Amino acid sequence: VSVFTRRVLQALTRIPPGRVTTYGDVARLAGRPRAARAVGNIMRAADEPGLPYHRVVASGGRVGGYGSSPQLKAALLAAEGLTVRGTRIVDFRRHRWTGKTRGTPSH
DNA sequence: AGTTTGACAGCAC
DNA sequence: TGTGCTGCCAAAC
Image (cartoon, rainbow, N blue to C red):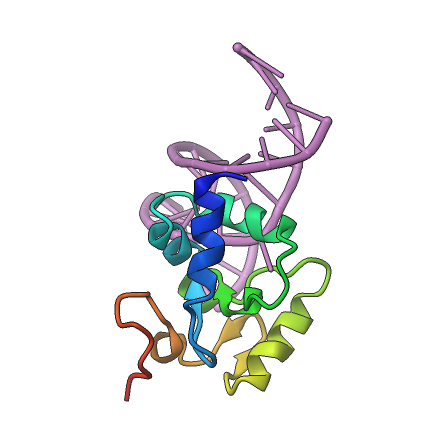
């Protein structure tokens, strides 16, 4: 497995509960700012248990995919206190974690 | 080594 | 808002 893949998985471990980040953010954290799509593929094939795959969403607050059950992803997010309306996360900006702040909840 | 495949991003309509 | 198109990149073929 490539270094990039390991960095992606490592980035996942940093996402605080109740917060979300985007595929693009993860790509950036892993050192490949334009590899958002590749991140999705890596996560699709990832088998590491215990990683918060559901906290990685698409740009602009869209929920994005989750294998065969995107609704499970929405349910998991809801279970962490986020509100999902249709394909979007309500107040996405407030819950977004970019990796720059070490994860302390904002206001 | 060239092609295809997506859990994507960003912009033009 | 939503849809379509292009650029992108790691992996599997």
